[in-house]
Structure formats: C-alpha cells, structure tokens
Length: 339
Image 1 (spheres, one colour):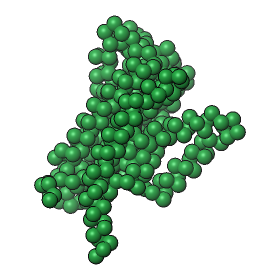
Image 2 (cartoon, one colour; image 1 turned 180 degrees about the horizontal axis):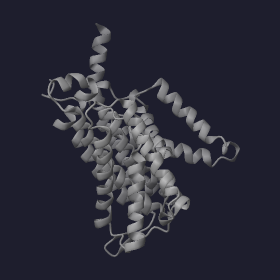
Image 3 (cartoon, one colour; image 1 turned 30 degrees about the vertical axis):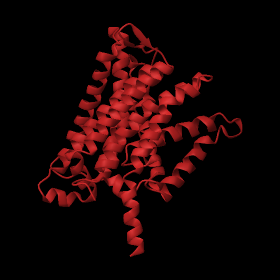
Image 4 (cartoon, helix red, strand yellow; image 1 turned 90 degrees about the horizontal axis):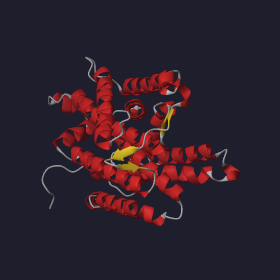
C-alpha cells in the first residue's frame, strides 16, 4: 500500500515537473548569447542546437507520440534545404516570408507522400516496415544527390544565399540565434498544443493500445499519417534554417546518418516529452564539441559519445528526463481536473 501511495504521490507531483523544465530551458536559451559574447563560435554552436532541436522534435512526434520509428526525418530536412538553396541560386530569392513556407510545404508534401505509401495501405504496417521504408528513402535520396551535378553532387551546394527579412540579411550571430529561437518556440508551442488537444488524446490512446482504439472505430493509420506529415513540415523548416545558417547543404544532410542522430537526440533527452529532444540535442552537441576539441581523444570521441548514449538508452529508456518526469506526465492527463 505504501509503495502504491508513493507512486501515486510522485505521479501527482510529476504534473508540475515538465513546465518547470520547459521554463528553465527557455530561460537558459534566452540568456545564452549574452554569456557567449567573447566566443562567437559558441553562438554558432548554440544556433545549430536550436535548428537541430526542430529536427529532434519532429522525430519525437513520430516515435514518442505515435509509435512511428522514422529513420527518414533527415530526408525531409535535406530536401527542403536543397530546395531553398536552389531557389536562392537560380531565382535569386531568399526572403524568409516566402522561402520558409516553401520549405515547410516541401517537408509536408514529401512526408505525406511517404505516409500514403507506408501507412495508408490496405494492411496495417509494422514498425519494422515503416522504419526500413523511411531508412531506404533517406539512403536512396542521399545516393541520388551524390551523383547529380545540378545540385553539386558529392560536394553539395555551398555559398547559399543569405536569408533576408526585408532589407536585413541574416548572418550567423546573435540575431540569427534569436530568430531561430523564436521559430523554435512557435513550433514547440504548436506541437505542445497538438499533443494536448483532442487529437493528442487519440495519440495517447494509440500509445497505450492501438487495437482497442481501432475497435472503437478510430482509423489509426490516418492519425499516424497526419502526425507524420506535420513532423515532416517541422523537419523541412529546420532544413531551410540549417541551409541558411551554414551556407551549405550536402548529401550527408539528408541521409541515414543525420536521421539516426535525430533518433539519438530524442532518446537521450527523453522521447514523448517534446522538451526532452531539445535537451538531448543540446547535451549531445555540446559533448561532441568538447570531446572533438581534445587532441588526446580526438580520434576516439565518436566512440566515447556512442558509449555514453548506449548506456543511457539501455539503462534508462525514458532518457534523461525519465529521472524527473513521471510516466503519467509523459503520457498526458486528460479529462476533468483532479482534486
């Protein structure tokens, strides 16, 4: 009885943990550039973290909230980045009011095409089928652009035209950082609203028992296709920002390597929380930056990082946030307010 009571008490308190974590992460993100004025390279790193966090959130929506193991999020990321780079090169157009919606549309349409093929067939697809399907798509796209001279082949597209807002050109630095932060906040709030809405209630039911929900008449695969398409939209937006910020987009930005990295971001931070992937992205990118700068272990840092990630994923499947956030809060509370 005491164990049950303590578990219930912890779950009740857990409802207040996630908002605290979100506010703490937001506060740190707002002041981060002010603490990095002496090292512009750190501002560039922090901006990359924000952009890659969008990619990680897109995977979390697939796996953490709907059970879709997607190894193709980088495909939507990279294709959108290429489209934006080509529009800037061939059409001399890089205004954010036009190109960012285009990138979102590219990610949305491409992910919907994959969803129609992988999720909306007559037979209910297995997790392995969807994961291999998305992995194959990412690999095929990477090989295609690697040999396509129009898009730079293996060298990718460099000297991407700068993002413009009116007469202002966005270069890497605090201004680009805060723009990326504002976009991430809007995307995060939209995702949070989605997963806590009635649509999110269906997603929560899917995570618990898909067969039972299907028995009640819900078309599970349609809901999966919708959330998968929205996740592709976010990945496309991230790809456009990455292309503008780095001034480069290449085959490696759309292949299985980056897709797997997005999986690690979410699993390391804590999938099914939205803020967990953001934390995971920040930690992994920071650890990678620090270890890669050490001459003594420069050659071995990917192995060291891999071991750290493996230990966390194996011994704590719920990720870093699993130590603080209860299962009830990760799944979500719906219905009337508890007394």
